[in-house]
Length: 305
Image (cartoon, rainbow, N blue to C red; front, side, top):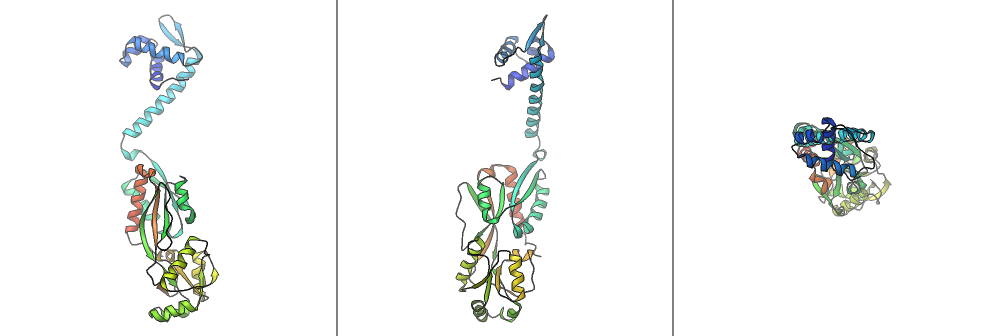
Protein backbone atom coordinates (compact mmCIF):
# COMPACT_ATOMS: atom_id res chain seq x y z
CA UNK A 1 0.00 0.00 0.00
CA UNK A 2 1.89 3.01 -1.29
CA UNK A 3 -0.10 6.00 -0.18
CA UNK A 4 1.44 9.33 0.79
CA UNK A 5 0.98 11.35 3.93
CA UNK A 6 -0.43 14.20 1.84
CA UNK A 7 -3.07 11.86 0.42
CA UNK A 8 -4.11 10.79 3.92
CA UNK A 9 -4.48 14.40 5.06
CA UNK A 10 -6.58 15.23 1.99
CA UNK A 11 -8.65 12.07 2.54
CA UNK A 12 -9.41 13.16 6.10
CA UNK A 13 -10.66 16.57 4.94
CA UNK A 14 -12.80 15.01 2.19
CA UNK A 15 -14.33 12.63 4.73
CA UNK A 16 -15.06 15.47 7.16
CA UNK A 17 -16.55 17.90 4.58
CA UNK A 18 -18.30 15.33 2.42
CA UNK A 19 -17.42 16.65 -1.06
CA UNK A 20 -14.28 17.00 -3.16
CA UNK A 21 -15.19 20.61 -3.93
CA UNK A 22 -15.48 21.62 -0.26
CA UNK A 23 -12.21 19.85 0.54
CA UNK A 24 -10.48 21.63 -2.35
CA UNK A 25 -11.64 25.03 -1.07
CA UNK A 26 -10.53 24.23 2.48
CA UNK A 27 -7.09 23.04 1.36
CA UNK A 28 -6.51 25.66 -1.32
CA UNK A 29 -6.35 23.04 -4.08
CA UNK A 30 -8.33 22.66 -7.27
CA UNK A 31 -11.14 20.13 -7.26
CA UNK A 32 -9.24 18.22 -9.95
CA UNK A 33 -6.14 17.97 -7.74
CA UNK A 34 -8.20 16.61 -4.84
CA UNK A 35 -9.95 14.15 -7.12
CA UNK A 36 -6.60 12.98 -8.49
CA UNK A 37 -5.18 12.45 -4.98
CA UNK A 38 -8.21 10.43 -3.95
CA UNK A 39 -8.01 8.33 -7.11
CA UNK A 40 -4.35 7.57 -6.35
CA UNK A 41 -5.20 6.71 -2.73
CA UNK A 42 -8.02 4.42 -3.87
CA UNK A 43 -5.64 2.72 -6.29
CA UNK A 44 -3.22 1.92 -3.45
CA UNK A 45 -5.74 -0.05 -1.34
CA UNK A 46 -7.56 -3.30 -2.17
CA UNK A 47 -11.05 -2.23 -1.06
CA UNK A 48 -13.34 0.68 -2.02
CA UNK A 49 -13.03 3.70 0.25
CA UNK A 50 -15.92 5.81 -1.07
CA UNK A 51 -19.60 5.28 -1.81
CA UNK A 52 -21.64 7.88 -3.71
CA UNK A 53 -24.47 9.40 -1.69
CA UNK A 54 -26.10 11.83 -4.10
CA UNK A 55 -23.73 14.75 -4.56
CA UNK A 56 -21.84 13.90 -1.40
CA UNK A 57 -19.10 11.37 -0.75
CA UNK A 58 -19.72 8.73 1.90
CA UNK A 59 -17.18 6.32 3.35
CA UNK A 60 -17.40 2.57 3.14
CA UNK A 61 -16.44 0.42 6.13
CA UNK A 62 -12.92 0.20 4.71
CA UNK A 63 -12.91 3.99 4.31
CA UNK A 64 -13.96 4.51 7.94
CA UNK A 65 -11.22 2.13 9.08
CA UNK A 66 -8.61 4.03 7.09
CA UNK A 67 -9.96 7.37 8.40
CA UNK A 68 -9.46 6.23 11.99
CA UNK A 69 -5.83 5.28 11.40
CA UNK A 70 -5.18 8.34 9.24
CA UNK A 71 -6.42 10.61 12.04
CA UNK A 72 -4.02 8.95 14.49
CA UNK A 73 -1.07 9.34 12.11
CA UNK A 74 -1.91 12.97 11.37
CA UNK A 75 -2.17 13.82 15.08
CA UNK A 76 1.14 12.08 15.80
CA UNK A 77 2.75 14.06 13.00
CA UNK A 78 1.31 17.30 14.41
CA UNK A 79 2.63 16.58 17.89
CA UNK A 80 6.06 15.63 16.56
CA UNK A 81 6.26 18.82 14.52
CA UNK A 82 5.17 20.90 17.51
CA UNK A 83 7.79 19.29 19.74
CA UNK A 84 10.58 19.90 17.26
CA UNK A 85 9.58 23.46 16.43
CA UNK A 86 8.90 24.52 20.01
CA UNK A 87 11.42 25.59 22.66
CA UNK A 88 14.21 23.09 23.30
CA UNK A 89 13.24 22.81 26.96
CA UNK A 90 10.10 21.01 25.85
CA UNK A 91 12.04 18.16 24.28
CA UNK A 92 12.81 15.61 26.98
CA UNK A 93 15.75 13.34 26.24
CA UNK A 94 17.18 10.46 28.26
CA UNK A 95 20.92 9.81 28.02
CA UNK A 96 22.38 6.57 29.38
CA UNK A 97 25.75 6.98 31.12
CA UNK A 98 28.01 4.02 31.79
CA UNK A 99 29.53 4.34 35.27
CA UNK A 100 31.84 2.52 37.66
CA UNK A 101 32.48 2.92 41.38
CA UNK A 102 34.87 5.75 42.19
CA UNK A 103 34.13 7.92 39.16
CA UNK A 104 30.37 7.57 39.60
CA UNK A 105 30.48 8.74 43.21
CA UNK A 106 32.63 11.74 42.30
CA UNK A 107 30.90 12.88 39.13
CA UNK A 108 27.25 11.91 38.87
CA UNK A 109 25.75 14.14 41.55
CA UNK A 110 27.47 17.35 40.40
CA UNK A 111 26.88 16.49 36.73
CA UNK A 112 23.15 15.95 37.27
CA UNK A 113 22.99 19.15 39.29
CA UNK A 114 24.67 21.01 36.46
CA UNK A 115 22.22 19.60 33.91
CA UNK A 116 19.28 20.80 35.99
CA UNK A 117 20.64 24.31 35.54
CA UNK A 118 21.77 24.17 31.91
CA UNK A 119 19.60 21.49 30.27
CA UNK A 120 16.56 20.67 32.41
CA UNK A 121 15.10 18.71 29.51
CA UNK A 122 17.92 16.13 29.69
CA UNK A 123 17.54 13.19 32.07
CA UNK A 124 20.46 10.91 32.94
CA UNK A 125 20.19 7.17 33.43
CA UNK A 126 23.29 5.77 35.16
CA UNK A 127 24.13 2.22 34.09
CA UNK A 128 26.83 0.26 35.92
CA UNK A 129 29.18 -1.34 33.41
CA UNK A 130 32.39 -3.30 33.95
CA UNK A 131 35.05 -0.66 33.41
CA UNK A 132 37.11 -3.12 31.36
CA UNK A 133 34.32 -3.48 28.78
CA UNK A 134 33.18 0.17 28.83
CA UNK A 135 34.67 1.08 25.42
CA UNK A 136 33.01 -1.92 23.78
CA UNK A 137 29.67 -1.02 25.40
CA UNK A 138 29.94 2.40 23.77
CA UNK A 139 30.96 1.02 20.39
CA UNK A 140 28.01 -1.41 20.44
CA UNK A 141 25.58 1.42 21.36
CA UNK A 142 24.54 -0.26 24.62
CA UNK A 143 25.03 3.10 26.33
CA UNK A 144 25.23 6.67 25.01
CA UNK A 145 28.28 7.97 26.90
CA UNK A 146 30.52 6.51 29.57
CA UNK A 147 32.98 7.29 32.31
CA UNK A 148 35.98 5.15 31.51
CA UNK A 149 39.62 4.76 32.45
CA UNK A 150 42.94 5.16 30.75
CA UNK A 151 46.31 4.49 32.30
CA UNK A 152 49.33 6.35 31.01
CA UNK A 153 51.48 3.23 31.28
CA UNK A 154 48.87 0.90 29.71
CA UNK A 155 46.82 2.96 27.25
CA UNK A 156 43.60 1.59 25.80
CA UNK A 157 43.75 0.75 22.07
CA UNK A 158 41.59 3.07 19.94
CA UNK A 159 38.22 1.84 18.66
CA UNK A 160 36.76 2.92 15.34
CA UNK A 161 34.12 5.61 15.75
CA UNK A 162 34.79 6.06 19.49
CA UNK A 163 36.40 9.17 20.98
CA UNK A 164 37.69 9.86 24.49
CA UNK A 165 38.15 13.08 26.41
CA UNK A 166 40.24 13.28 29.57
CA UNK A 167 38.19 14.60 32.49
CA UNK A 168 40.55 14.09 35.41
CA UNK A 169 44.07 12.81 36.10
CA UNK A 170 45.24 11.45 39.43
CA UNK A 171 48.40 9.84 40.78
CA UNK A 172 48.89 6.35 42.13
CA UNK A 173 49.18 6.13 45.89
CA UNK A 174 50.86 3.41 47.89
CA UNK A 175 48.66 2.35 50.79
CA UNK A 176 51.06 1.10 53.44
CA UNK A 177 50.77 -1.03 56.57
CA UNK A 178 50.60 0.97 59.82
CA UNK A 179 54.17 -0.06 60.65
CA UNK A 180 55.44 2.01 57.70
CA UNK A 181 54.04 5.26 59.08
CA UNK A 182 57.48 6.70 59.84
CA UNK A 183 58.80 5.93 56.35
CA UNK A 184 56.48 8.11 54.27
CA UNK A 185 58.78 11.13 54.55
CA UNK A 186 62.00 9.28 53.71
CA UNK A 187 62.06 8.37 50.02
CA UNK A 188 65.09 6.07 50.26
CA UNK A 189 63.77 4.03 53.18
CA UNK A 190 60.30 3.93 51.63
CA UNK A 191 61.67 2.47 48.38
CA UNK A 192 63.65 -0.15 50.28
CA UNK A 193 60.55 -1.08 52.25
CA UNK A 194 58.39 -1.27 49.12
CA UNK A 195 60.87 -3.61 47.44
CA UNK A 196 61.19 -5.84 50.50
CA UNK A 197 57.60 -6.28 51.67
CA UNK A 198 54.64 -8.23 50.30
CA UNK A 199 52.16 -6.62 47.91
CA UNK A 200 48.43 -6.87 47.32
CA UNK A 201 47.52 -6.27 43.67
CA UNK A 202 44.80 -7.23 41.18
CA UNK A 203 45.56 -10.15 38.86
CA UNK A 204 47.80 -9.34 35.91
CA UNK A 205 45.05 -10.25 33.44
CA UNK A 206 42.95 -7.27 34.59
CA UNK A 207 43.41 -3.76 33.21
CA UNK A 208 44.13 -2.28 36.64
CA UNK A 209 46.46 -5.17 37.48
CA UNK A 210 48.55 -4.55 34.37
CA UNK A 211 48.58 -0.80 34.97
CA UNK A 212 49.75 -1.32 38.57
CA UNK A 213 52.68 -3.46 37.48
CA UNK A 214 53.72 -1.00 34.76
CA UNK A 215 53.50 1.87 37.27
CA UNK A 216 55.63 -0.05 39.78
CA UNK A 217 58.21 -0.78 37.09
CA UNK A 218 58.38 2.92 36.20
CA UNK A 219 58.91 3.77 39.87
CA UNK A 220 61.77 1.29 40.26
CA UNK A 221 59.79 -1.11 42.45
CA UNK A 222 59.61 -4.85 41.80
CA UNK A 223 56.54 -5.78 43.85
CA UNK A 224 56.53 -9.16 45.56
CA UNK A 225 52.87 -9.91 44.81
CA UNK A 226 51.65 -12.38 47.43
CA UNK A 227 47.93 -11.56 47.38
CA UNK A 228 45.72 -11.22 44.28
CA UNK A 229 42.70 -9.05 45.07
CA UNK A 230 40.49 -7.21 42.58
CA UNK A 231 38.30 -5.27 45.03
CA UNK A 232 40.13 -2.07 45.98
CA UNK A 233 38.25 -1.75 49.28
CA UNK A 234 39.45 -5.24 50.29
CA UNK A 235 43.01 -4.43 49.20
CA UNK A 236 43.03 -1.29 51.35
CA UNK A 237 41.62 -3.20 54.31
CA UNK A 238 44.35 -5.82 53.95
CA UNK A 239 47.01 -3.10 53.85
CA UNK A 240 45.50 -1.62 57.00
CA UNK A 241 45.79 -5.02 58.65
CA UNK A 242 49.52 -4.96 58.02
CA UNK A 243 49.98 -7.80 55.53
CA UNK A 244 51.29 -5.76 52.62
CA UNK A 245 51.29 -2.72 50.36
CA UNK A 246 48.66 -1.96 47.74
CA UNK A 247 47.98 0.74 45.17
CA UNK A 248 45.00 3.06 44.99
CA UNK A 249 44.17 6.56 43.75
CA UNK A 250 42.59 9.54 45.52
CA UNK A 251 39.18 8.84 43.94
CA UNK A 252 39.35 5.18 44.94
CA UNK A 253 40.09 6.23 48.49
CA UNK A 254 37.08 8.50 48.40
CA UNK A 255 35.02 5.31 48.28
CA UNK A 256 37.15 3.57 50.92
CA UNK A 257 38.81 6.15 53.22
CA UNK A 258 41.65 4.88 55.35
CA UNK A 259 43.81 5.98 58.24
CA UNK A 260 46.68 3.87 56.90
CA UNK A 261 49.80 5.76 55.83
CA UNK A 262 49.93 6.63 52.13
CA UNK A 263 52.60 7.95 49.79
CA UNK A 264 52.61 8.95 46.14
CA UNK A 265 54.14 6.20 44.02
CA UNK A 266 57.40 7.47 42.48
CA UNK A 267 57.62 7.68 38.71
CA UNK A 268 54.68 10.04 38.11
CA UNK A 269 52.35 7.38 36.70
CA UNK A 270 48.74 8.51 36.46
CA UNK A 271 45.23 7.23 35.97
CA UNK A 272 42.85 9.25 33.79
CA UNK A 273 39.07 9.36 34.06
CA UNK A 274 37.79 9.80 30.52
CA UNK A 275 34.46 10.46 28.84
CA UNK A 276 33.94 7.86 26.11
CA UNK A 277 31.38 8.43 23.38
CA UNK A 278 30.65 7.49 19.78
CA UNK A 279 31.46 10.28 17.35
CA UNK A 280 27.98 9.97 15.87
CA UNK A 281 26.33 10.33 19.30
CA UNK A 282 27.88 13.79 19.67
CA UNK A 283 25.46 14.99 17.00
CA UNK A 284 22.77 14.77 19.68
CA UNK A 285 22.37 17.94 21.75
CA UNK A 286 21.50 15.86 24.81
CA UNK A 287 24.69 13.77 24.67
CA UNK A 288 26.84 16.87 24.25
CA UNK A 289 25.08 18.44 27.24
CA UNK A 290 25.88 15.41 29.41
CA UNK A 291 29.50 15.38 28.27
CA UNK A 292 29.83 19.08 29.10
CA UNK A 293 28.26 18.47 32.51
CA UNK A 294 30.81 15.73 33.22
CA UNK A 295 33.63 18.04 32.17
CA UNK A 296 32.28 20.67 34.56
CA UNK A 297 31.90 18.13 37.39
CA UNK A 298 35.56 17.18 37.18
CA UNK A 299 36.69 20.79 36.83
CA UNK A 300 35.75 21.19 40.49
CA UNK A 301 37.87 19.57 43.23
CA UNK A 302 36.47 16.02 43.62
CA UNK A 303 34.72 15.32 46.92
CA UNK A 304 36.69 12.56 48.59
CA UNK A 305 35.16 10.63 51.45
